[in-house]
Image (cartoon, rainbow, N blue to C red):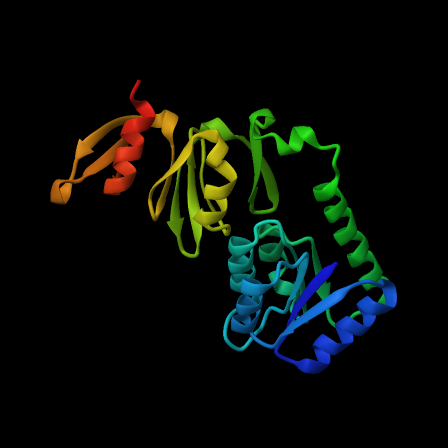
Length: 245
C-alpha cells in the first residue's frame, strides 16, 4: 500500500507514520509539507491513500483533496486534522475517514480497516456489475446530510462553479464539490460530452444548435428553455458527427 501524508508540521507527519507502521507492515510512505509538494508528488507517484491536514500554509486541505481526486479519481482520502468542523465537507468530498488529533492506536486501526475495506471493494475481481457502465442506471450525490440516488439519464447538464460544479436534473438543481473533470471521466460511457471547458452535457437533451457570436454555435436543451450553453468549434463538429447518420 502506498500512503501519502500532507501536513505542514513534521512531528504530526512522523507521529501518523509511526502509528500506521505499528498496525500494518508493507506500507510505503510519501511525505509532503505543503499542498504544492503533494501535487508535485502525484505527478510522479500513483498513491492508494492520502492523509490530508485541513489547515495547510498554501491551501485549504479540502481544496487540495478536490485537486487530488481530479488527478487520481480512485485515490482514497483521509482527513487528519485537529479541526472537527470540516467533517461534513470532507465526507461530501467522498473521504473514507476523518481522523481527529491527537490520534489513538485504536482509532488508527479502525481507519486502516475502513481503507482496506474500500480497497477490497475496488480491487474485487468479482464486481462485473460495478465495472460495466452499461449496467449502471443511478449515481449518488451528497445533499446536505442526505445522500441522494439520482437516475443518470435524468441529469441534463453540469456546469463548473466555485471549484466544484452545479448539476441540473429534471427535478433538482444542486452543487457538488467534485470538479467537472471528475464527472467528465465518470460519465463518458453515458453519452455525456464536454461541449465547453465549463459545461458537460447529456447529449440526449440537446434540442438544437443555434448560431452564436463570432460565427460560432450554442446549444438549446430540452427542459431548459432559458439556458443557452456555448459550444467550442471543435466540439461543435463532434456533436454534429454524433447525430449524423
